[in-house]
Image 1 (cartoon, rainbow, N blue to C red):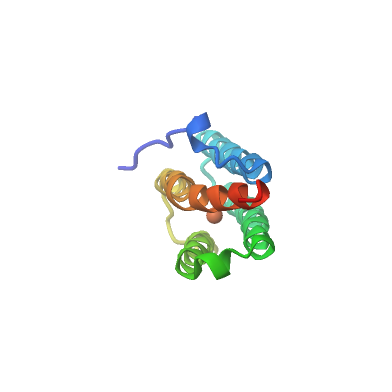
Image 2: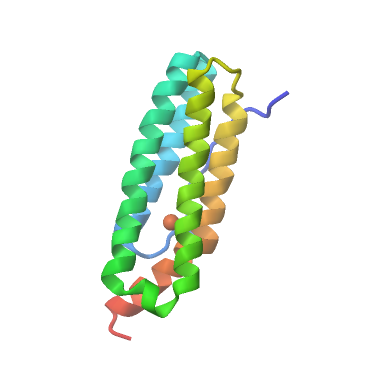
Amino acid sequence: MSTPYQPLIWNDGYATGVVEIDEQHMILVHTLNEAGSKLSRDASPELFKQITQDLLSYALYHFDTEEELMQEYGYAEETDEAMNRHLEQHRGFSAKVLAVRESLKSGLPVAADDILNFLNTWLVNHILNTDKRLGAFIIAKRSGW
Ligand SMILES: [Fe+2]
């Protein structure tokens, strides 16, 4: 029995302080919440396929934004290990969504609520532990420290 999707309520505690990153995070949160409410009305695999496709393309766009900022501000030179871990987490998220899409394409049963709850938790942990570290680094660079 899966737990119904728990919407994620944005709060300032999730802000990294980097405007472009925060705006995209809010869109990701909104996308997940929308997915939860749409799928509660229509749990069809077709809709879930469409949603995971939209989610994946926005997530990839967002990861590109962060990874370009890492390049621009020289994150690798400062903290190679943190950057590699960060990139691995981005790849992990994409791989998870791709695996779900593969299951949907093969007609396997997929528990949408469980997956959305997982992605929601992933996003919160990633923002709080990983993106905030990148955000602090970028803010320091931008203020010329
Ligand atoms: Fe990130």
